[in-house]
Image (tube, rainbow, N blue to C red):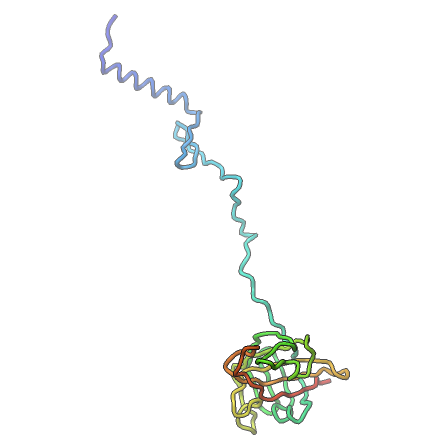
Length: 210
């Protein structure tokens, strides 16, 4: 029997291994490094994602929650209901950010809080006592961004020789009338039980126009 040279035997062995590999082309071999399933025929099949990983759903995406809205306690036109109110503003119109007096006084404001009559605007002094309202009655606190003096009088309408820093507004029912009370406050701190430098300027009263 003729002996096959060593080099030829190596070539035949390589061919035999290739044939076995082709025959096994339908048998998968896991590739743990990439997380995929690889077949020996070079066909790559992506493994399904784990069952406990949820897919992103744009329809269920939610944005950041909006800050709570501060609803005004009084809006509209009101008639002066006292000599002080007549001197401070005259008839007044209260809008979303603007408070305008008939005498030319004007306040650009921003709503900063809804407090209760029982709350203190400075140590030991409550809105309920200053505005003559109940302890649970809501009071709208507005910061004064800018103001205009009354047409015929210099200085602030509420605080005269000082800038008005805050306005506290309450609305009550009295003898079947809607009554609005507005109190001017001045000070560098926001009105609170610990605000030592807050001082009351003037309080005025108005009646809803009928």
